[in-house]
Length: 221
Image 1 (tube, rainbow, N blue to C red):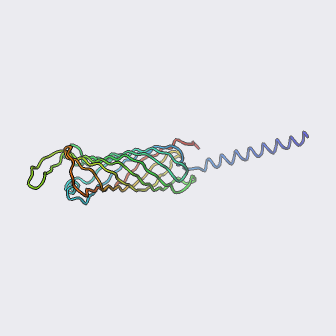
Image 2 (tube, rainbow, N blue to C red):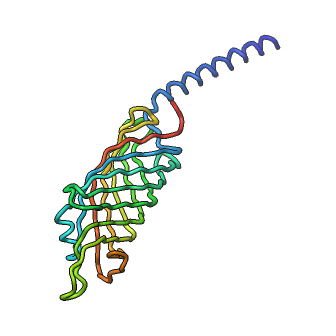
Image 3 (cartoon, helix red, strand yellow):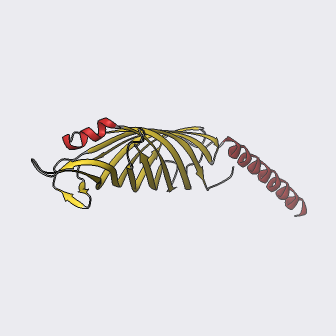
């Protein structure tokens, strides 16, 4: 009986050592992990466009801008993430405006490619946003032959955005990101100095490219 117990303990010890070594090797092999909670900060540069004759003159004067995007979310597994985000864009590169901004806040979903053994993880994502544009000062003429006045134009609506990019993981929980996005909104409510304008088909699109960092609050392999 004592001999059997001795052999059992030796076998158990050997199996435990092998399992611990295997786990350690697997942990060392893990290069990336997109599961769990994370935050993401991006700096981007882009351009907006429109088919609206009313907005075209504003767009042509200063079409380019820079901005920042902050997002936070949760990875359900190594493929799917959901996130909330806020982005701010400033198009006042000429310095001729009091305000010339585009802000968005919304929800998004991201699909990741690759696996935990890869440092490089490409992804695709989609976003639904509440969007707001503010342009101050612009000139507006009320009706044919009406007075030409200056003031602030505000636009509010829903935009859809699609994009993609990749993350390079310096650590399994810390990555640098490259990200490109295309936004489109076609149904904006427009206000000039607080007065609603009934102008149809005032669409806005935006394309931007950014770089940033992502931090995952998960395992530390």
